[in-house]
Amino acid sequence: MKRFLIAIFSLLLAVSLFGCDKKTQGTTTTKKPESSSQVTTKTTRTTTKQSVSSQTQTAWDYIVEDYPLHDFNDEYELKATTLKGYFFNPNMHKSNDQLLFVDVDEFLAALDGFLVYEEYKFEKTNEQWKATITFEDEDTHETEDVSMIIDLVNDSITLDLFFLYNTNDMEETDYSFGLNTVEEKCYSNDDITATYTFAKYKIDFFKYEDKYFIPYWVANLFFCTFDYCNVFFNGASFIFAYTDLSGLTAEQKVVAYDESPMKGMAATKEARTNQYYQLSFIFEQIFGVRDSEGFENFNDALSQSTRLALVNQSPDTNMDGYKALCYKDLDDGHTYCVHPSFYKGKTGKFSLSISDVGDAFLEQNNLYGELAQARMSLNLTGTDKYVRFYGDTAIITFDSFDTAPTKEVKDENGNELEDAKDKDSYYYIKYCLKLIAEHGGIKNIVMDTTLNGGGNVGAMLRVLGFFIRDIYTETYYKGFGYKTSTCYNVDTDLDGDVDDDDLYDEYTWYCLSSGYSYSAANNFAIICKNAGVKVIGTQTGGGMCSILPLALIDGTSIYTSGYSCMTYYTDKEDGTYTFHDVQKGIAPDIMLDKSKFYDDEAIYNVIHAQDQSQGQE
Image (cartoon, rainbow, N blue to C red; front, side, top):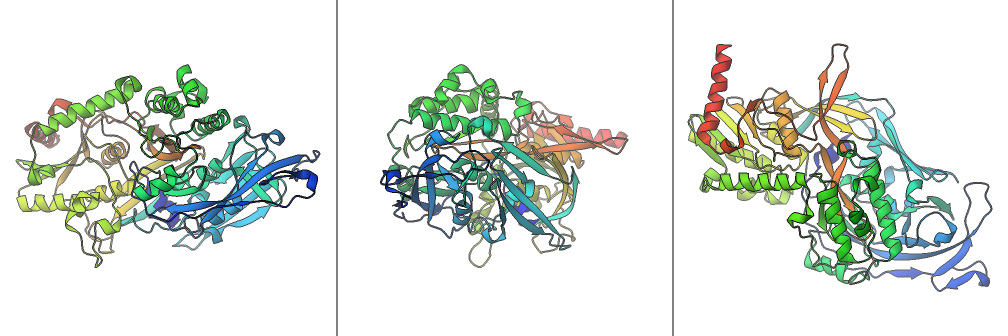
């Protein structure tokens, strides 16, 4: 399933730049009433709902508007420029006031270019909307159907895991270059599905006039967010972006923020209630480390002051609620604020003080400061910033896993750009290995990830490919009961052949980790350890789940731990497997106090002590 693998490789902890589009004027649609007595306002119609049950038909009011759809996403190109939004009279259905709805079919069609719209096959009744996609295995040509069902009676969504990845390839960034899947083992039932229920959150799915309506934020979450894109709604237009709005150009910010009717306003009470329900659903049914954090209900995870701030109509007080939610109440390293709402405008920013953060965040922040200061004391300049040498040992400074857009690492003729090493981890390691070869006399290479907070999974795999032949990753998809072990080989010389000698195995490799080595850096250490590459240092920082870039109803963007979670397994004598929670990190093979992380002699000595002990054995 090619698209699925690309989606996994593109798991990020950072944002990208955005493209630019011109503003399109929107139009308000007035539907002709069935009789003159049913007219309420110029843009409102009262009519009857096709009931999904035997209940008596009731009168409905709704407003529909054809909003501009701005494509501010460099990775995909949408074919549509408008998208209809619907507001319904809440007195006649279960959802809350001022909640924006979309017709599912119209939403999917508008995102054609990002989604592969022609691959959907639909089955629709008065009780459910069902879409099916057929995937074909590129090697065996065997096909498999995956589907999503929106249940109008029970207000639920049931979907196959792979249904989430029906997207086109990215145009600017190739997250999977050089990667080859050798083997994949699945540990689950054949039916890899999850069911999400919405009744608790006052959400109503319904059919009217052959249209199937769900709240806009639900459509965005299931069709966009899981693939690292989002559609924001600023009250005047829809905005399609890669992850969030933090990288918009000045021109795009005018469209997104200055032209929003929310700018400078206070939110309505109903709007805050709707957003609180959105947050409750996400953190109760999607949040990847809910079990690790020890709560079942969203309310239970929050202090009373946070709950009150999250429903406060003041944009400033509301922002305080998000800070408390992300940095204190949840205190999860993958949960953080990116940019505030449309109410705050384009200059709004989240700022933190000591009182805003919890113990775990503060501990990580203090550790980073301590380690960064210690490394800075080395006064590394020139090539020493990349690699430093002590005896027969080279130490590579490696602080993030990055995959850059192709145009940032290659010219129009496909030649590598000089500064590619500073933008993409693959080219960074290539450059470091060149320096090591030129230095000569090196037997050991230490990958210093002590200040590495994570990054892109594809980049991580390519780095591992320089010194590990068969790279095994284990992943647990929370909610789907699906665990998988995947083996990758990497074509490190990019010659199109992964079966030739791509390893730099003339060196003995080590991984130096700290309590700040988080997320992809945590996984990096796990894979090294399981492959027999010694991990030196202290317990890693943890972080087992990929991030989920959330677009909240008012335009606020926060990131959190998603449903795709790293793990590793051990075999049992009976042939079964135990999968391990790595949210809190893993222990090293060789302990090295953090005070010695940048003492090159100490690193050299601990490596050679290890060599001597192995020789004695």
